Amino acid sequence: MQHMRFFAVAALLAGLAWALPALSQDEMERVPNTVFPSPQRSEATFKHDEHNDKAGLFECGVCHHGETDGKADPTFETPGQPCVECHPVEGAPGRTPLMRAYHRQCVGCHHDAGNGPLTCGECHN
Image (cartoon, rainbow, N blue to C red; front, top):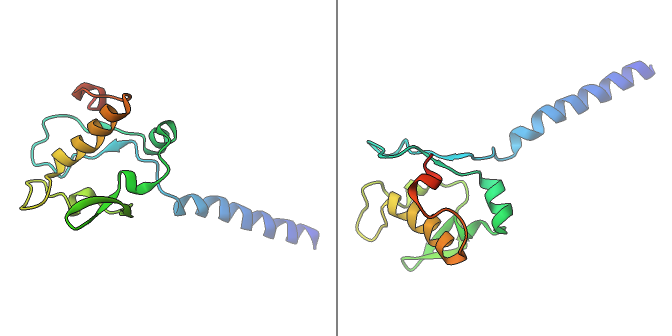
């Protein structure tokens, strides 16, 4: 009887160990460039969690911002929403094109913080 209980608990724990990681966000390691018709450079290397831990970024809205009255609003968070949904590849009236949005966000923050990559090859490698 105790063997059955042991195997039942072991099976439950094994199932949880297998299923729980599927519920968490995968660690992002590269910013995909597949939305661009003819990318000029390789995808940018970006280890999401490592970057945010190192930079002390704990609020999603710092990067995954929404907008209020046509302006970026970090209090309106959009994690999980692809940037291209609001920033079209070719741009649109009143919308920042995707590539410019990426570069403004990343390079602008690195410049303001005085830390992080600033040149193309430091991210696109």
